[in-house]
Length: 116
Image (cartoon, rainbow, N blue to C red; front, side, top):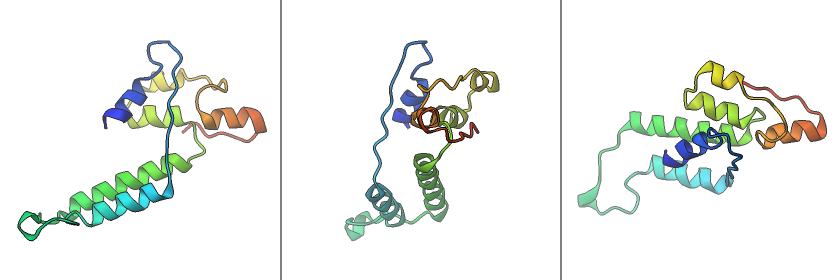
């Protein structure tokens, strides 16, 4: 969560900032496996009871991250919404081609961009 918090704070001081997101389908597969098999590799005396609600919640968060990666929306707006930024703060965002990779793509190829 700390990395997300830091990424969400970037640029709020008025200084230009940059955030890189590294993702591979293997990341999803590995995290999904670890969530669904929390006792993988543990010895029988260290086995923890499986909390199905926790697993469900973790899978939903993982899917949310995958949706973020594949989204065509402004990534900055999505992060601000996730971090529960105030509505007026979100409205201040001006798409100028430097907001995120999706915003830049819109300016370069003329596709439409959905803010929220």
